[in-house]
Image (cartoon, rainbow, N blue to C red; front, side, top):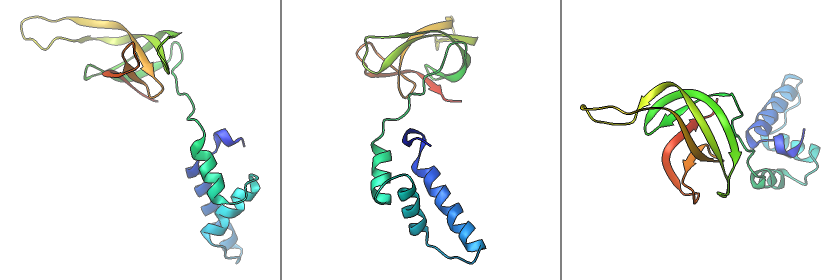
Length: 146
């Protein structure tokens, strides 16, 4: 297992399972000892160094792929749809997306007229929130990871 795929939560779960396994065989070890054992198995001096190393790792990029079904909010309205186009952008840490909604969204809050959108272009950052052309959050689109 690579360090990139390890999480603090998964290691803590492994430590609990290890402790439970040894307890079933009348060999009591503490939770802390199980964590230290896991750290050594992964080549680290102790649990503190392993957990600090994992915390420093960059988060994996969760970018949706083409033709993937997505859901989220657009101007506060829930939507489902598809990614039609994905392009790199000059905006630091963001990609440009073209999203087609399954059902058009009325973007006007007037009782006198409506304006429906079914397809939009936007920049999404690594958190799947929309940003403007300078990389500042604009709270227009928010994707919800599946």
